Amino acid sequence: MLPIIRWRKIWFALSGFLIASSLVMLAVRGLKMGTDFTGGSLLEYEYQDSTPDIAVIRSNISELGFEGFNIQPYGEKGVLVRAPELKEADHQKILQAFEGKGEEKRFESVGPTIGKELRRTTFYATILVVIFILLYVSWAFRKVTQFGKINAWVYGAVTVIALFHDIIILTGAFVIIGHYFGVEVDTSFVAALLTTLGYSVNDTIVVFDRIRENLLKSSTGETFSQIAEKSVNETLARSLSTSFTAVLTLMAMFLFGGETIRYFVLALIIGITAGTYSSIFLASPLLVWWEKRQF
Image 1 (cartoon, rainbow, N blue to C red):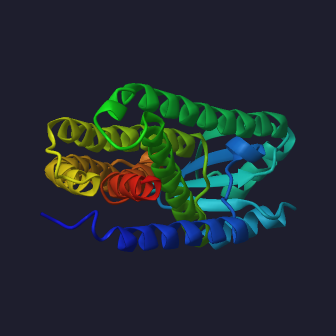
Image 2: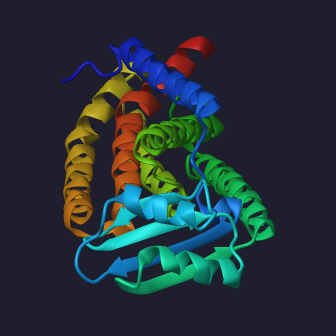
Image 3: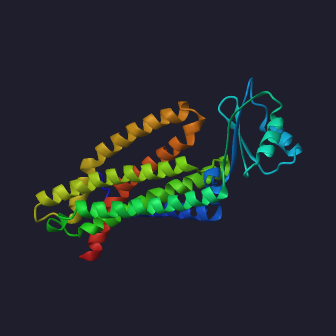
């Protein structure tokens, strides 16, 4: 049996370091917001032969009087240009920078008002999901008090703490990715965040449910810490195998699924990994810590 609960101070220290690092990076660097949130225009252009050097494209656009555009390779022959909101005349002017060596695949604009509204909606949606998760877990474990040491709402609170742990780590990872690789977060990142919430809750509830079962069957001599240790180890193989197969599938999608979904898939890989870690090494140890402070 692995001493997961007994070594809880190690897991708390590791989680504390990851959360603190993520928050510092978020405060110092911030997320690189995409046009979905800031407003602006996105142009996708595909060359017939091969993509020229990005510096050449940037130079051509600069000669037309446009500066500060984010230009990235896209797929094998494509290029993505992210810019402030462009009028149609400017859009047509920028197409001259590509010298007619391919064709425009996509052009879309998002106004700054829509971007602000989307940021606000995303924030409220995330908070609402967390509140419903707290209420659901508290309700699901409403009868646990008659078997155990702590109230049902504590299970909900610990689940929410684990969720914030996963969200903060995922966000911090994308601050670093955005800073070094120029990756912007968009609505697909929000979808990955919400998917991570769902996955993490599911995994955590599996462990908590085993704790509830073992509390019901426990002898009077067993402490809550011993029951939690046994429960985590009983669900360890299931949690790891489920996460491993999910991450294997996502890795295949990341490597071969194309540029369009690459960073959405990467967000899922990071989120599922963080969610698996928090379900095993954070949630149950937090329950034990809470129980020891109460009694």
